[in-house]
Length: 217
Image 1 (cartoon, rainbow, N blue to C red):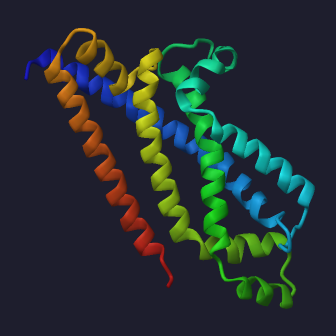
Image 2: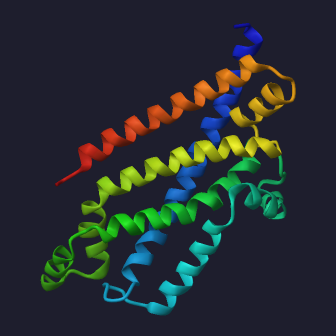
């Protein structure tokens, strides 16, 4: 392998890691409160508010219904406003984050629903406030499921980041399209695929390990 290819792959890998990491952090920061709100405002829960729950559910479902490749193109004006450009790794993080937030929200919602309702009732009988139930019962009990869910999110973001290369988003996807597809560089295409597979394997392995350590059952 020539030094040129090594340099190209190293730069693209760094861009992909940068995009995925920042997007995952933004999605987690916004998605966890969203998921908690979806659960706690549902019927019969500690902060029951059906109208708010339905409104959030519609927004989440609508966002998740749009294929990522269409979402990237559709929000280009918003991307320009936020990132100052519609091309490059910084620009790609805008659609990546927007696509991942509702996904994280639903994953958190699913994980929190797995918590035994008896624990919530026990906390309520002891006089715990809704905020105390969220922080000391719901989230700690669901940490293993949350870790697995966030692992799936990061893996999805790796796939989405490769897709972002189709509109100049940078990273491994961009490298595969520009060199592997448009210049018929099969060696670069192969190395790009291998690196993506390794990344997914590492993330899944790490996520499984963390989830196992957090599992209280």
